[in-house]
Amino acid sequence: MQSAAAQSAPAPQSAPAVVSARNLFLTFQTADGPVNALSDVTLDISKGDFVSFIGPSGCGKTTLLRCIAALETPTGGKLTVNGMDPDAARKARAYGYVFQAAGLYPWRTIGGNIRLPLEIMGFSKSEQEERVARVLDLVELTGFEKKFPWQLSGGMQQRASIARALAFDADILLMDEPFGALDEIVRDRLNEELLGLWDRTGKTIAFVTHSIPEAVYLSTHIVVMSPRPGRITDVIESPLPRQRPLDIRDSPEFIEVAHRVREGLRAGYEE
Image 1: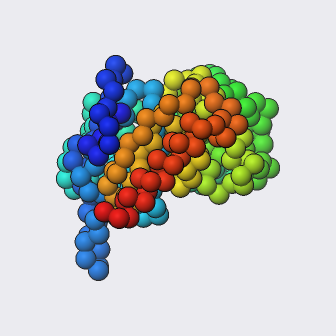
Image 2: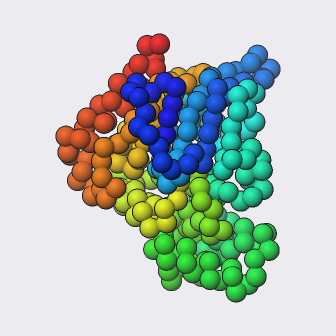
Image 3: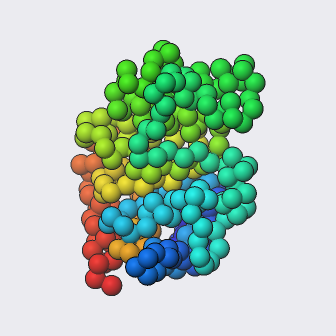
């Protein structure tokens, strides 16, 4: 991963960039005048990275994620996903998207919710069942496929939402603050599970969060963003090992990275 705003020279990258942004701008036109959401964002996300975007509310973290997902259209610069423009990548089913809320249909079972995109895409019934069983196992929800969302806890619903995004086996997983509404104990458990899932699948993950500990614990790279208009003030490559128990958060290495993230956030306000 690289950024024009990174403080140190980037290490050579052997993995190809699956997301590449060059001088990206996005301005919304509103009744009160233009709102500059993103300003001159340059960034590469390499295959297999776990990248977290962190910054103050309204800094453009989710907007950047939505641009990658072709849910917003930049007004300047260039953005590619798997070498294609974002809309072509969407049509090619290059990514799965996990929203802040689980967004499960209450009248469909957990299995039925996960199966929905597969039905829309025209997978055969046998393929649907195989994929649903596989992703339920990945998120440790085997045996809950016939339950309805209201019969599951909030954390389990989010795991079902992740399973739905994984069901069509996209290489990229986009996650917009999926654990923000959960209590700390559940959040810790899901962070551990997400790291395990990332390790087993090798997917590229882009993750929006407001939590410094969560960003540092999960990520290979942390992208620090400034207040609006959203700019990248730092891209931090994590020195932590791929296998990370929760108690690594007490280590000097973890604390040092968290301090750098905090300094990057402070610098964004001072610029």
